Image 1 (tube, one colour):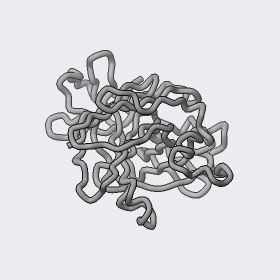
Image 2 (cartoon, rainbow, N blue to C red; image 1 turned 135 degrees about the horizontal axis):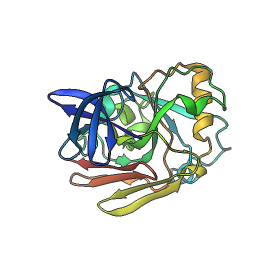
Image 3 (cartoon, helix red, strand yellow; image 1 turned 45 degrees about the vertical axis):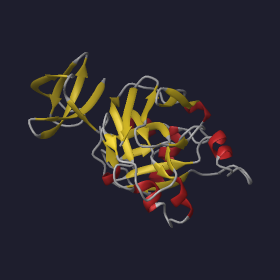
Image 4 (cartoon, rainbow, N blue to C red; image 1 turned 30 degrees about the vertical axis):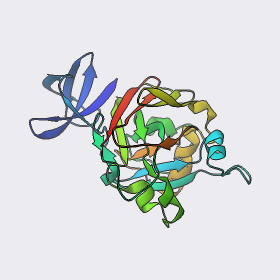
Length: 250
């Protein structure tokens, strides 16, 4: 099942996508209201209502190497940073290239949205708390990572987290292809099986320390191939079994 958020009659609504028809629901994954609208020309929104966006950094060995962070041992636990809900951007939207960074990067990755409150999860229970999976674009002011105390500007600025196009509820996250294309050229091409910390391990680790609430987003890390973006570029993040998130750089 695919779950989408759309703007309809001036308000945000959840919907189930069935073919080319969006059936409005009362909540994320909730019962249908009886109203439906066509997918085209519906205005899709980011498919999440997070209190927090939790991100995993340096979760692919080749990405660690390409940034020159492989001088020591591999990480023994996930490296975590946060974005706020202000960072969300809708699928198909435009993100203005900030004038306060000289090195604006793309990082495509698998994202997931929490469906039920999660605390102290175990490997056997972790995936049952996921509402669905989607495509995420972790936009990064690479130069400011060196000066931010907690990557506040570098990662958490407005619209630095495009998400979408929808949630896929029936998906096995263990070995999915994750690709990023810039202006039609493939720049990243990895598989989630290459993660140092797979999705289950991430959820178990996170919920030892914080409670994940319904609507919270978890970004799981990016494969190698990250690079700079300029105004006029179009970024596509495609996750196998989900679809493609398109973001225009203004």
